[in-house]
Length: 332
Ligand code: 5GP
Ligand code: MN
Image 1 (cartoon, rainbow, N blue to C red):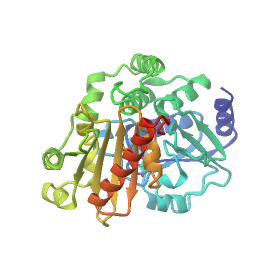
Image 2 (image 1 turned 90 degrees about the vertical axis):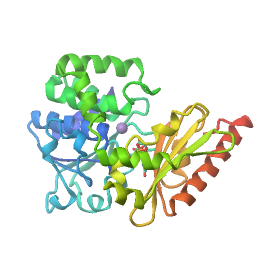
Image 3 (image 1 turned 60 degrees about the vertical axis):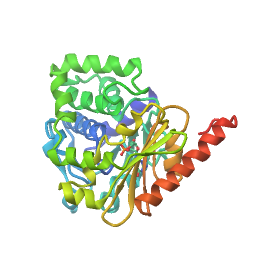
Image 4 (image 1 turned 135 degrees about the vertical axis):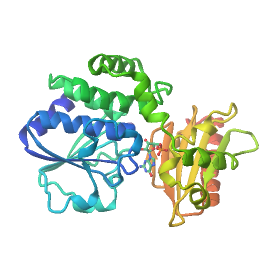
């Protein structure tokens, strides 16, 4: 618990703060960030929140989501403390913010990714935590502040998202216990939160999924499967690479598949990949080989190659790791 006190001391001893999270923010990034925003405000601090990418529509229901600003809004705001959440490297907040959002005193890194490089002056990194939201929950409790309705909703959403609705192996008993307490404190309808996050899909995204599923392919042994989305598919369905959240899960649902890959063709010709592993292969390491990162079972990276070539390289890297597991190494 010493780490918690050190971070709380930094909060207590400073006045002005900026918060940021990784590009293409997800439920945990936004949820943890907004709960921390509210907590720091209740401590009487000046706090501003800057993200590279806008909050996805399905998270607009979160309290305080309207305070989030873009990289062009920083201008000459120069906080004492910059807190970066849910990002394994400082660069993950995006190029422009990385250049312009410079604190005068210190950077605080709060995260749960395995592949992180402890880039902060202060680091609160718990790789066993289900989510960054779980860490923020403990931080607020350590300060003996009430969680309250609004922060409960933000943190529950973050934990729900990062555990895949309590289905992944990071859904430890502690994640369930915290979720139970958040539901009690927040008194929100859990089915309503689920519906906001997962069942507010646009018809364009559903049509995109129909196109993407046509690209399904497996290695001969059926252990690695992949899907991709091309620029043409985005154009045809009026969608963008931001609309592919969850698509990789359609590959992992196949019985033989151990590693699932989803690749989006970006406008500039690069490819953004999402990887998921069912058990043995550490896809965090696969992604790290392509300058990405994440966790053992969920990771991502951006590759300077076409979607076909990106898949080929990722499959080869994964197969190499599978062979090394068969040969008795840990495969990680
Ligand atoms: P997703 O596939 O859902 O975008 O990401 C899965 C996990 O990998 C998340 O924990 C996410 O933060 C991480 N991740 C995704 N893309 C990248 C990337 O380009 N770089 C790094 N370092 N991590 C990534
Ligand atoms: Mn997270």
